[in-house]
Image (cartoon, rainbow over all chains, first blue to last red; front, side):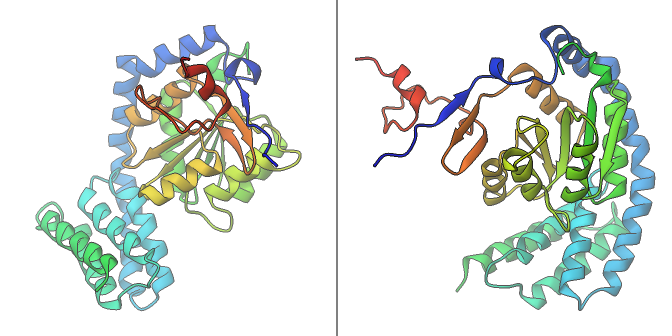
Length: 149
Length: 169
């Protein structure tokens, strides 16, 4: 017995977000240099308040060391904001930690602790710190752990 | 919503982080879109969809109690979903292959890997307008066609109905 064949529904046969005229207007707006410049400026303006918010997560992370679930949740929050805050290395270390937390065979407490230390250093000292190198080494450590013995 | 000025589009931003929601709202405002609703997780988002017309969703992936994947599945498949064809852009820093596949199989329209930039966001929204995708309904899946590329020299195996249109006999 064969399964029913798949049904394909073309874009012409379901409601679109906009008609052609408005879609074209929107595309022009989304690509307009003035709009992109304004949006870029808005992102730069957001960096400072976002950095302040991020620092509160970083302080919470320092206090949450032993609580794996809380550490994971905070790392995800920091990771989401770090690039906008202008702290990309902090974001990379958080992403590395999140990847490690997702491992099926469980997180290694020593690797978690190393990440937390690195996040605290990177978030507090950037851009002076040697965070880029640390982030790279931690990512490599997580990859080795994931590959297993 | 055909006939509507794009400035009147209604966008739902779903993220458990209020700062991220504020950034997305600001970027949409820069593009001229001012009708933005916010929700902190998938269940709040579903509630919002039931209360007003939403034209586009920007959603985070990892949220509690309902994450972006479960939310997308509900929009696509739940009985009484207000719009199973709703464009959904998933924005996340967790862009490893397994998660991207998970999002794709849930039925997201576009996947935007962080870092978030205005160019990135606008390009993904433009993609939805410029290249709307066919939807597919088959056993175990309803959502945008998951094939993003047509391999020129692909010689089978053929699995889908429109594959046969490509075969020259």
